[in-house]
Length: 125
Length: 459
Picture (cartoon, each protein chain N blue to C red):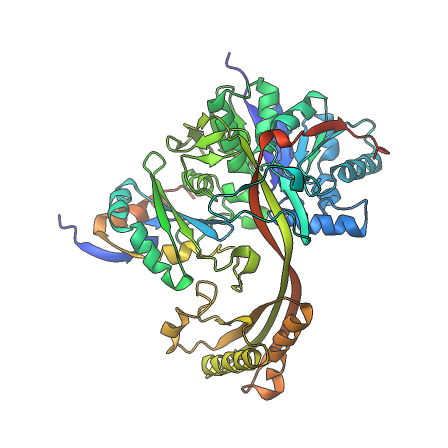
């Protein structure tokens, strides 16, 4: 059976949440299904995340991998442009930033997208 | 027979959280029949600065303004069923909060109630004589500056557990780590050793999962079509069922909205975490690298694998100081050409502010095109120049040293009514003082937390 590669926003295969402390944000990226972990580990590097936040003045970006939890944690310095302390952005905490992170694109087999969708649908809601 | 699990419920994740959230949580705790505690987390980084200002205006105040509204619906049931309530709702005035709780208890007809306070976190006076160390890469904060509004050390769980040992029905604290409010009743109930690092780590993780209230149960999570959450208007706040060996099951009261599943729990585990192998607290260094979550039934998730190492020798102090003034103005444009008129309005107001106040930090947004994701210099919005959204709002914001400058800059949005583009509507102006925060470290032995019972008339 063919399983073509497709380019999709990260949001199609993962979810996440932003937290803040001072002028530093952390964004979790959590694949919906297990087969999303490897392509994220390979493609969504700290450098790529830093590029996605370049217009926010991103400084150092570190990615922590948590294979047991099935998640990644990106820590981004300086992206709050002053933090809650001094930001002129309406969103001084950067609470919306997980959706900027989830707009980074990944190229994955169609089955990875399908499995993520199935994992979301199969949650017994 | 296995030892019964201890249940910890959370009823608030910040000072202005839903005041009715505790009712279904307490009902569930009572119905379970398990030994239990309930906690309220109401202190964000800046909250203590506002509390200190309230206390300066009225020496009886300075605790969480909604304290009585939070406690009134649950206090009698908790006292009757021996479910201790813990909260950092004492803020800048734990003893004042304790007296307010006694007044509330009397109004509710509660005949006997023991209220304990934990004090010693307030180091505004003492900080200057302490051996202050820099926080992470930040430059060492000048603790001698005159505009410090609040300075508080993060206390851990031990003094709160000691307060429970006094038989307290309610324990009121000022600044403590959020997680200490959940760890303390576990230390007290199971008699865990303070240096049993893995169990203490499990207690800190329990607190971390619970401390933001609904963020563990579908709040700050819902994304329709991707992550659906039922009945958010009646979202249930979280309950952790913790075993003596540190095994955690996270759930929520039956019959409430929201959801608890591995995804809601994973998001909360990593919330505000930096290095997941080294989450520093005054109680333990928590290592999350081996933590795993698994489905344990409808709205039940098991969390295992928290590891602990010795706590740091220093305590974190958060200092709040005067941070100048924020000035904001907003105006709407709608219908055909709205985006172009909004951009013209933003440029016009910004040009006026920059001319009148050279060097002032100013930012403009067109809300509806791109705003919160953008940087101060508008890097993203340049890519949206072709879009013509038909209902957008212009926002201008400045940071100023003084109120007058902030107000005058914001007024440049109001002048757009008559002197700006066509159809400018619905101006709102906001001018408010800002509080800045900084952190530093102090040696652990600089602080002696105090625990005492406070009666209705005690100072």
